Length: 280
Image (cartoon, rainbow, N blue to C red):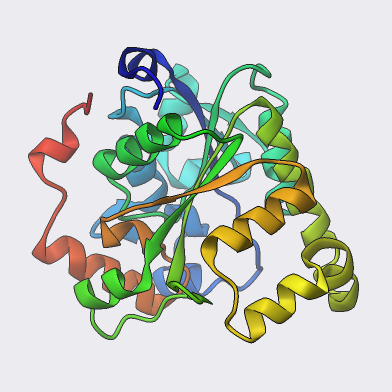
């Protein structure tokens, strides 16, 4: 384990992806917001919830927001003011999430660790982020991915439907939380390759996933450790998982039911005063 003093001194630059990916997003249609990131959750635009959370984390030194388009900023005056004041940096998004991430990484010094997340993570709290970053620093890795156990989410939020990766050692849900050390940034290029092949599934399987990995997954013989090892070999990046105990980490807002779930969670258990204070 790494020295705790060194861990506390290490700081990340956070890159937040905030672009709509469809012209008919269900959240914008339902709320009437100018874009998904501006959709209100319990009265506050999602993107501001995420930015406030990151601002409360001592392990985050700077925040870069990728998207939404500048032409939409007038629809969220608070965000426009934060950009104008330099509180956050903004850059235009690209046509895919991986290309937006690559564009953002170009603005960050190569030796600076990066936290990547998304603007639709309305339930993200400073404690979740701080826990994820501390655990990422404590393990030997070049990149980390945040995961929540499906059983924890189901227990906390019965009836909610999440995308679940069903492995031999359990079901896991993504948390839209990633870190990259210098060599770990190569993983974004691997991600872009997967996006490029998304309409050519056999090439995706043969060149990115691999038939052996696919068969292991289909026959439920794949463990989380084996899956990460296989992707690490394919990408050339040592990837490790960070399992987060807070089930809110596995809830983002992609569908109207997600929005309703997030608002119901906030209504019965709003982020505490402790969460709102700066976490260190």
